[in-house]
Image (cartoon, rainbow, N blue to C red; front, side):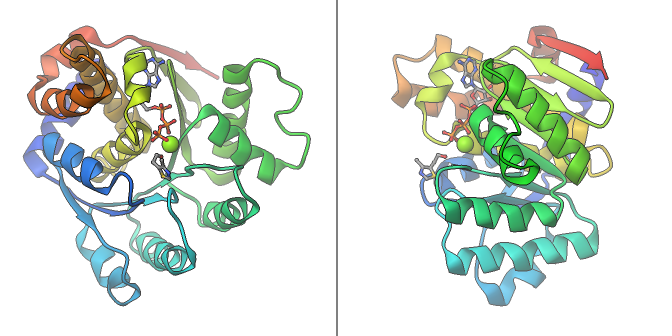
Length: 268
Ligand SMILES: Nc1ncnc2c1ncn2[C@@H]1O[C@H](COP(=O)(O)OP(=O)(O)OP(=O)(O)O)[C@@H](O)[C@H]1O
Ligand SMILES: Cc1ncsc1CCO
Ligand SMILES: [Mg+2]
């Protein structure tokens, strides 16, 4: 896996895949910069009239519902339809799942389009699974991360997606392998849209490696976690952290990532 991650980091830098994001107003600028920092190329677009053509020219599509509205949801459906037709990977970031009935209704529709990869925090992944598994799903567990793993497994089996639960430990659930990554730093959660950045980077790695979305997700999360750790050492607070992460994503070598990664693999 370590060798694979190294190779993926170099492939993204070499290929510079184009990543189409329909994302939220809060993070547009920062996720575009993060994509550039890892060597990928960002395009943010949501006009209905260009969705089908845009998806034709990109390597992956990122769908983030952070500041959704009715027009954008239609954009998402058009873009996802084209990605599915062309067999291109698309990644769902279910920002705020469970917060409002509208968000949950939209997420239910998007899930039916079978995301290649889903990345959310524990409560978002739990809310997504609850919505689709009936009212009791996840309620029995009192331990949040354990409950999120169960929810992630359910989503993986039901929709065939790779599911990443981010947090202090990032958990990536595939068909028969689960990987735990313990890199990262608490200061990452004090920068808005760090999770959205994670999802955008997964988009870049999935574009560079469309046949193995599981390993692409692990590679992207490892790179971001290690960049966050290194950036935190150089930062005085969230402001400098936001900038320093971009610099670390740009500067980190594949060797450094392989030597600093804290990875645990289990087969289920
Ligand atoms: N306590 C922590 N320790 C280490 N890393 C963390 C911690 N909290 C978050 N991270 C890292 O920050 C990144 C973003 O994950 P997080 O779970 O905070 O996303 P999120 O809640 O969706 O964020 P947002 O909604 O602001 O985009 C991940 O790479 C994760 O590993
Ligand atoms: C703060 C916020 N509100 C909608 S999206 C977003 C960015 C973090 O997900
Ligand atoms: Mg989020």
